[in-house]
Length: 552
Image (cartoon, rainbow, N blue to C red; front, top):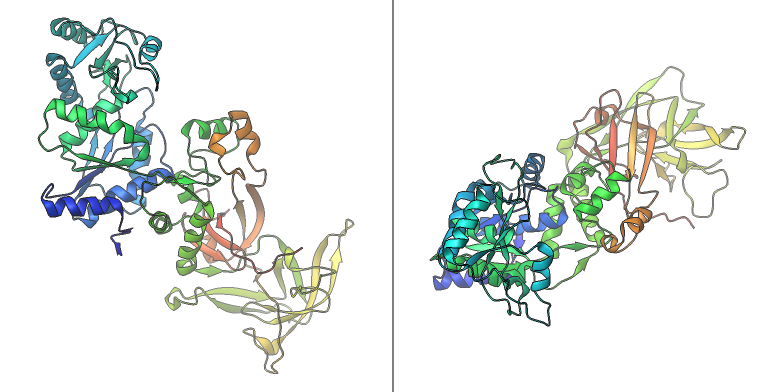
């Protein structure tokens, strides 16, 4: 059963049970990204789960920017995250920052020290790693683990006052160096960073670690269900430990779900930057990337992304989803709602010998068979028109029903046209067709009942020249994220982008705002790119149509 955009799932089963038993009386979730990058398709799943869960139970979902690492964060990413969430159709009840809780989190650290549950350590990062042990061997205590409460309070205050350099000291929780869970082996909870913060400026030179700030922020906000991806499952005991030691009486419950893995898809921030630095993609919103802003620019509808995530479902089972399922959802949404237009990507001039000189007429083609309210395309028909270069062959194979010498085809919405000849250049490329038309077939039907098997699209003399960017898959490799940097760059498909400079589009389509979606009849689904101008419109191919003709 579908409710508020998500099918019934194990998370909702848990919530239903706890609400029925009175464990909780309300539902509050949050989406807590670190503002150190642009969001990708995996984040879209987390967004949908958290926001739609809150919607289902008439609860609250906040956006909380987990800005605990100022060396990697930027206000640019904050605004991009907000924009992506709004575009997906969700609205945060409140927008918070982990940095807003820095005073509170600092007080919690002091409380741990006073309770003998945290200590200042002088070991280096490498030494801490060495002392931690392995999955099969327990760690060993730091020589600084048994410092007195008074000494730890003094040292932590000195850390806060800027007495020490970056990395010179850290504050660690005192838990269990022999724990089978590596996360419980005295994790670092504060480190020194003499870096200005995009929210707090230079107020702090010590910053909390994610594993410390995250559960305390959840509890401080009143989150009841902390929904996160499965890689945080081993962090849950630490999440619960911090909340218990600080003394929250109504602790949030962490529930993990399987993250979204897509074939032929790259979500790594570092590796996306490698592609940018090598000029293989243009930026975070490159339509070939799996970033939300990239998919938006490509023309993927927000409803299609939400439908895709719903189809994938919510479970704990690890799986990899074929990228084709996402494209199918995009195609279904655009097929249902995108208006149609005739556009010729590679124009071939056609001269209709028996059409009157200096005459023009208006041909109307419906925008959408299921949406009459969309109206019609009003196309100018004249003695000279244009068809797709690929719709003509001098010597066609069998079962080829498009244009060739002596063959009659239907121009969509217009007339029957018969090819009588063609011109070539010195290289044998066809440059112009000569045809005749049947005036009695206006609208695409013959009064004598003769059948024409081929229907092709066309462009009139008032069409506007446009740039069309034909985007395809960036990789053919099933898991490009597993490649080395060198292998990754080599794996980028050379035909993942083809730019067509002199396509012809209907004037009304050329004048549309960025993001407007169209179906170019017989060619695919396209949208207006932000680079577009009235003088030079630019369209991006969103997804191809399924073609019934597959040449050998």
